[in-house]
Length: 336
Image 1 (cartoon, one colour):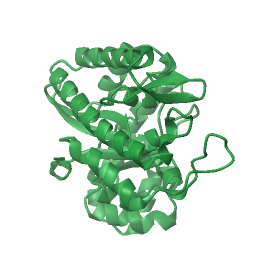
Image 2 (cartoon, helix red, strand yellow):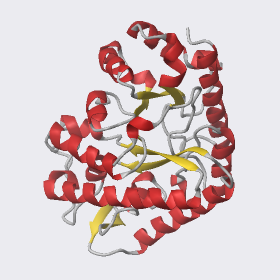
Image 3 (spheres, rainbow, N blue to C red):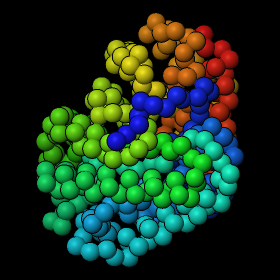
Image 4 (cartoon, rainbow, N blue to C red):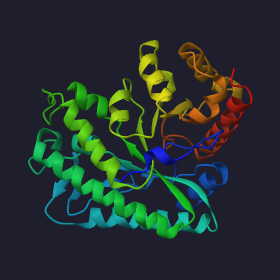
């Protein structure tokens, strides 16, 4: 069972969302480990091609479910093929680099997987439609993913024995799944809105499979904060610029219940970076609107980029991660 409630999150926490630019795995891992000392993560480098992207990596973790690349995207197949082997090879390369640069490391370490609903919306069945339209396929994906994530976490613990794992479940399409906005293959229709109870239950199945705190992540508008909390999320990661005052009640309830907010405040695309204090001013304003204790802010909120950094230059990605660290410290030094 998950130990989501047992972790005492450190103050001034900063981390990355997941993806990094370029194809140099060792350099990306080194950057992440050296910059994000309190919560480094295993990076994804989608520029290497299919299987290195976040969907392909997670498909490579599935147990007894296989997929290959078609012109339209990923599609489930009867047996493993070269695309599965390529995804597994990329992950081994990533884990080798992680093991190399975390020798003697003891502390939090984050890994990322794509959640069952985004996988169901992104991967086609053999007939060409998204698996989302087949309830049985959705159940199979959930069960396979839960077991695959458990095995992946065990492998990371074996390679980095001092790590206290945090598992991030990426669900960028969850809001679209819940609101019936995932298009069919033809593009002329949409899949119906998924039942919220079924969605919550599947997410809970994945959460309960890993003996680690789970961060639920989405960069999309309208993150279903209450549903993610009920599914067992220890933390919720989102693009803070997309929060509106209509979200205040859900955010306040989550924070007061002990859910940590991973606030994406540093731009994930190239551009000028504001000073560290300016980066977190929106978080301070949110805290004031919610009427919460400023002294609790630096432990209740972690700082991240707004989304993944795959579209940035390596130099900008390094600067953005370093800015997250400095912004988290600024929040602790001056919460008001």
